[in-house]
Amino acid sequence: MSNLKDITLFLLDMDGTVNLGYDPIDGAKEFLEELAKYYNIEIFTVRNKIITVEWLKQNKIDHLIKEVSNVKNQFDH
Image (cartoon, rainbow, N blue to C red; front, side, top):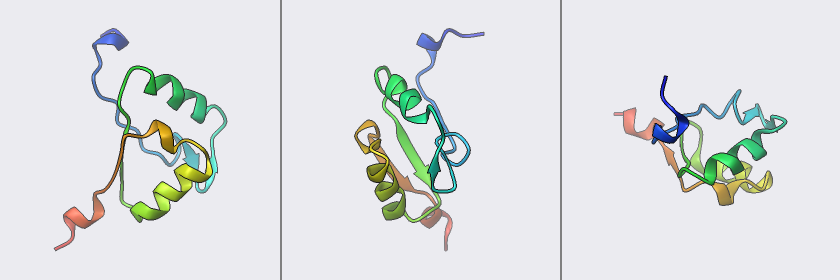
């Protein structure tokens, strides 16, 4: 098993890790604050990017996130 210091990327599904629906999960902000000390955090969402960014702002965790990208549009043809 690798040390956490050897890990360069964390992929998290927000729903169930950071929030349940529109409610933040207890401890999620503190988890992201600790993670942001060592890593850039990028969110890839299939939701509307604007809604995701607004949710992050409302829950005062937007400053921890480097980038929010909408991947849904990349698969639509």
